[in-house]
Amino acid sequence: MAEKYYFTVGLEIHAELSTKTKMFCACKNNPDEERPNVNICPVCMAHPGALPVANKKAIENVIKVGLAIDGKIADFSEFDRKNYFYPDIPKGYQISQYKYPIVSGGSLAGFDITRVHLEEDTGTNKHFEGDPEGKNISYGAGFSLIDFNRAGVPLMELVTEAHTFESAEETAKVATKFAKELQLVLWYLDVSEANMEKGEMRVEANISVSKEKNKLGTKIEVKNLNSFRSVERAIKYEFDRIVGLLEDGKENKIIQETRGWDEGKQTTFSQRKKESSEDYRYFPDPDLPKMYLHGKFSAKGGPASGWDLEKMKKELPELPEAKRARYREDFDIKDEDIEVFVNDPSLALWFEEVAKTLKEKEKIKIASNYITTDFVGIKKLNAKAKMPSANNFSELITLVSENKISSRGAKIVLGIIVVNDISPLKIVTENNLLQSSDEGALKEIVEKIMKESSEVVASYKGGKENAIMSLVGKVIKESGGSANPQVVIKLLKEMLARP
Image 1 (cartoon, rainbow, N blue to C red):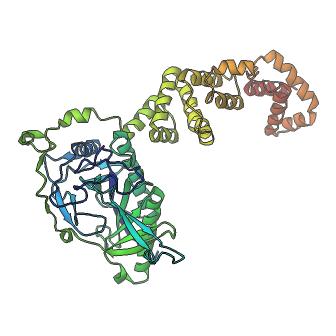
Image 2 (cartoon, rainbow, N blue to C red; image 1 turned 30 degrees about the vertical axis):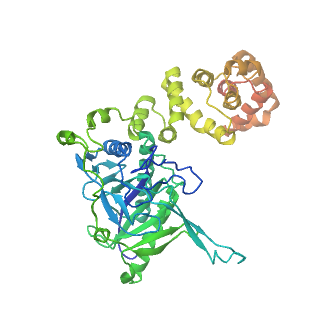
Image 3 (tube, rainbow, N blue to C red; image 1 turned 90 degrees about the vertical axis):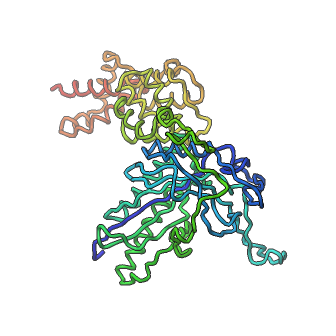
């Protein structure tokens, strides 16, 4: 690049909330329903005269998110009508929030949050290629159908502040990190499954490129980002595309628009001109009452009045960043291991039970390594593998830490106890896997191997220190695999040092 550019990104993330019913009606909220148009009713299908009623649990879930990110929870809030027409919106408008969102401010993973508000999801468009043989002319060249099962599902939208970076790569990575962290927070709070493959969490990126640090370029929104890999690649691709136009002097071709992400082609494509808030003609929904969520005005009533925010804050679970800090402090394990546990709460719970049994930090570190590498590896290959009891796994780690079994022997034992949860000590005893540390017995084997390997011995004494490992291997083989490598190395060095 000939010039210096500044890359700015702001994210809009939608997450479907885990409630039993939809946002404004009693229809089942079931993201796994495969039959089309079964979870629908006059309210979510916008039949004349049908009136919405707000889902209190959905509002509570958004408040939890607000407390988790240290946002400000509004006392007064209301729902608005966002007017636009798409076939998957039965009413011709979406019930959303505009001027008075439930949450304002907050921060997460290095991003400042602008707002978190609540709205209803749309239906799902199903596109078909039609009849390729032309036998059913009613299908034509292709057609689309709409499944309204998702229409009206409670949808949380979180909007971040714009953040500026000095490289496209850094911008894409930081944005992706934020999206991942938000997904974790939603899981820990148990407010959303946030499964991106199912569309339960969708990321949109607002990006711009400028030659001036404190000035924004033309804003472009990128949609259809349904995986973290897509988030990173789409942001990077779009930045490169914009820079390319600027470098070629085609700045006039950079217009404010919404672009989609084509996963197959790994490119963005233009969808439509970007709307402004005025285009949506927001106004308060007359069918829904005002909400007083907490504080001195909550007594006025409303469908979701009177939450005790202090009580809710105390009842929040330990969140990902707090867990990371605690694991560093209490267990002193590697950051890579910590991330494995943070991303798998059930694995983390088992690890903590093991840590309580082991008590000693050095043993806990060994346990952490075996869990995040060996156990996780076995689990990927064998779906039937289960976490053994904390006592049996701790027994295995103790055998390893005391050098009573080799790492190879430990892997064999681990492979057994994840299927049959039995005592590792019993396994190693019955299968002759205990390492021998009897220096007297091993000394005889070492002397024998040294006599048989005069060339290797001479090589070692001539300055090739790595030659000792050849002798170690021969001693262990001669012992039937029972010799403790550390003891063997100690004896070899002592005996090789003799004149």
